Length: 389
Image 1 (cartoon, helix red, strand yellow):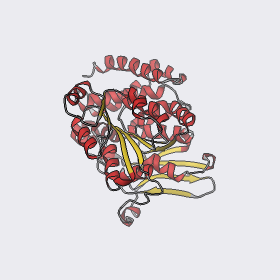
Image 2 (cartoon, rainbow, N blue to C red):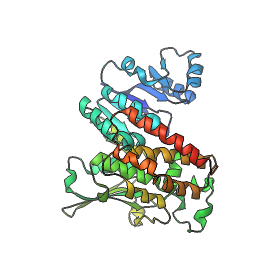
Image 3 (cartoon, one colour):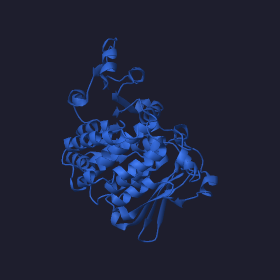
Image 4 (cartoon, helix red, strand yellow):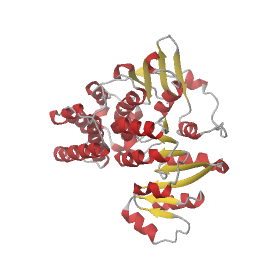
């Protein structure tokens, strides 16, 4: 019996990597749904190659273009309110890899239709883990995190109570600016910030890696996923990106999870079953193991890491606030409306605003709470950043 699979965000890097894995063992998988925002060209190619009967394309213009084509044997939808039409019973696996806040709604909605969900959407876990967790329990759906760091922690902590953990360390490559001098950091160009040394990523996540904001988000994710206090989570810079997580236990033992710099490994392990046991990888890299260069984060170079000190101990709408602020500022930087220095400064300044601090006391009780907070924050931030444009 083939595993039935759905991929939310199939035209992005995570979706494409998953399809490559499936392609090598196609007799074990049946893809029943693919989705994209507006990349209709790749979506149709994928649907035809994998004989997929259902596709969702969110962008209205792209939807109209596809609607005018001959899509024989393919059901075309324009939104995610059609899951109940597509899934008559639970499928085996869903990959949720829609980027940004747009991925939150579909992630929550699809949980009841699958036996297992792998989530690569940071924003869903950061802003709505309590809502996701409730849905997972209610629908008896298994969960696997796909981020390399969180997958590594999940793998290291299988069946182990978090009470046995003394400390967890997430690693960060340090991005393209790790070896820059303090003086040069004031005049960083967009092209420099986008040159990630070890990972191939989109522009948004490349900038988050450059500022180290991605590690702020990953610490929040780790705290939510593994029910840890922020005091038990630290970040270490590790330029080789070979070690992804380190766990020190109270009994003195230390677990170190390492793997090649590719997302295919966590993706493969999220989908593998007893029938799919191995993936071709490189030999153990002794050169990297002997030159780990693990260091504590230099907060003068990466000041946004200080945001971690201001986070509330329990999930709140403040997490939505900082995600929204960062999204808007990174977009401004990518469009060359603000400088790299302004990006860092504004992140620190805006996240301290009294107007936003009140969100620390508000817990998201439903999906709409998060969207409302996002919209309220966005309108305020737009007015603020106009001064710098």
